[in-house]
Length: 156
Image (cartoon, rainbow, N blue to C red):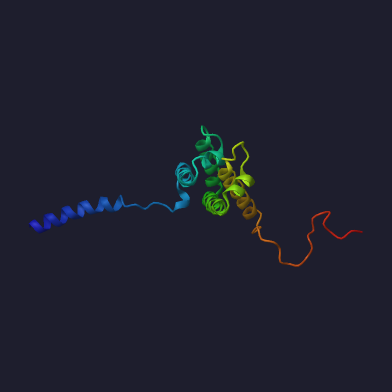
């Protein structure tokens, strides 16, 4: 009789636990705020001003990020946008490690060039998003045909 009661009690406890199991959706469905927190933590680990430079000033950067990520989630491109920013941060970190002075000169826009990392991430993330949106891989064409841009053809 004790075994029957103990078994029934365990079964009664197991059913609600199974119902509360974590059936969380994939990472793409995370909230916009969660995506921005991840971006902020990742960028701030490398450069404290990078997140603020990427999205705005110190006071409104997180709000602008949440707004942008919410729009991207609605369009179904939040995961791609998140990955573009994180990939850009990795690329900029490597470029800065190779030659810090040249990096600051290339990307820095303020008097002391300390915003270079954020500007680099912003530039690369936007470039990555535009090339993927247009179907362009960012690689040069290997068709062997001349560039069809006006002014680049043979002179008449």
